[in-house]
Amino acid sequence: MMIAVIDNVNFMDRQVILRLDLNTPMHDDKITDVTRIERVIPTLRKILATNPRYVVIFSHLGRPKSKSPAEFNAEDSLLPVADALQSLLGKDVIFSNKPVGPELKELLDSTPNGSVVMAENIRFYSGEKNNDIDFSQTLASLGDIFVNDAFSCSHRSHSSIVGITNYLPSFAGLSFKAEIMALEEFLENPKRPVMGIVAGSKVSTKIDLLLSLLNKLDYLFLGGGIANTLLCAMGYKVGSSLVENDRIGVAETILQKAKSSRCKLILPTDAVVAKQLTPNTTTQVVDIDKIALDQAIYDIGPKTLEQLKNTLKKCGTILLNGPVGVYEVSPFADGTIEIIKEISGLTKAGCIRSVIGGGDTLAAISMSKTNEFKPEFSHISTAGGAFLEWLEGKSLPGIEALTIHDPIKKKVSHY
Image 1 (tube, rainbow, N blue to C red):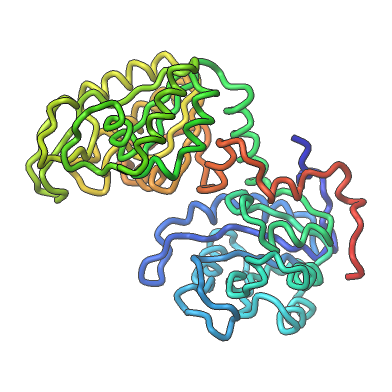
Image 2 (cartoon, rainbow, N blue to C red):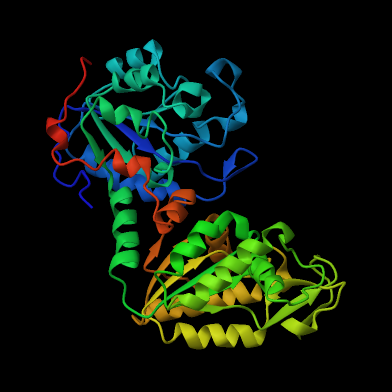
């Protein structure tokens, strides 16, 4: 893919607008995971190394319901994120409580050369989500060059992702580039055999993904509620397990597609079940055809885990998206953690290339870390929805907006 990147761009004296995804998890106004902030530090440092006039950062946090800053909820403020970025960057970050408008413009004009300014949550404005032309032009008026290092937002047709590129020379940042390179390698030039482990509560949210992967993979293992629904479609009784009964027809379509593809579809053959989902509940390991009416599947069983490990050892490339059990409740985290350890070990040994994605997957990986175990993977994507849509083969607006041949000559508006 021909995409404009910042590798050889000189930002000296340029007014740089930088779109980041700093939508970090928060608890009691404190950031609980700084991964997304850490990922963009190299891009910021590269831009700053060439002495720009200033860098103004736009990001979002959460999904504010307000239509203007006057209505904003303080819980959606990026101020704590600005503090964390300043600490990790090792440089002052000036925070503006106004995302756009004359007050921000006045602040930017008054800053010393080389300043970093973070604007307040851009989703406080409805014009952002609507990809409003006037709002896009207002954003563009704050700089003379645009850098997008928010691959995780590239499936959104928002002003700060798509609209702004109509008015400024536009480039992808280093994290954005790394995501594309990793996913292109996985999809277009993987070391075979290729295996996908996909899990989640609902098959309805991953229909397109599963149908797409069946055309690309050699092995596909399904876990969680997705697997339960497919097992029901095959005639198994799964007790009180989570099942999308209104998606049985879809499950049958997936099963039929698997039969006609080269991909081997793998489903659990045994499971860890319980009558209730509590930390101290009584658990039992049973074969899939032996689940009682009052039992529910909460994790894969040892036979399924052993089959997975044996298949992983045959492969050259692995995709992991989603925990295979209810990892948040201690009795049901074992399957997910064992898979994480197996993939990590094969990656460290140079046997496989591993691509990891999905919010729950990252949370499970974080939970698996101990003093004795430090997980290692070829690429961990923080992209969420964009990661999945890319794997589905969909065109992402944010990528299309950067796919140009000579961006520095792209016509710039009167700003």
